[in-house]
Image (cartoon, rainbow, N blue to C red):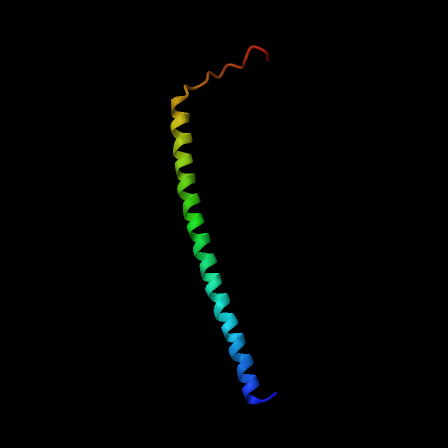
Length: 67
């Protein structure tokens, strides 16, 4: 393999690695945004569950009549 061929192959591999790195960065950004969105949504759901639980009166400790 001649020096120019070797250099060309190295440049091609480097270009491929650069493109792959950019694609990974985009995927990580997308995943980070999705995790942040899910955390916000989970926080809202936890708040709603806590509010709903506070509205329900405490059940007596007496078992139902069919026991």
